[in-house]
Image (cartoon, rainbow, N blue to C red):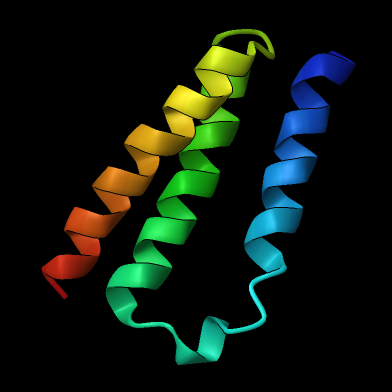
Length: 72
């Protein structure tokens, strides 16, 4: 695995785990955060560490997570 893929994945994982207010978040907010993290990692892997792919994947994942959380 290339370092360019690993660095965005680690940063997104740290950002998601650094949510100090996780307990105060609604189910929808938690789903959006998790979706953004998963989408960002997937985008980074698919585009071989490209910034646009990572950010785009995080945005799309966040929207999908938000919609899934809305149904809970």
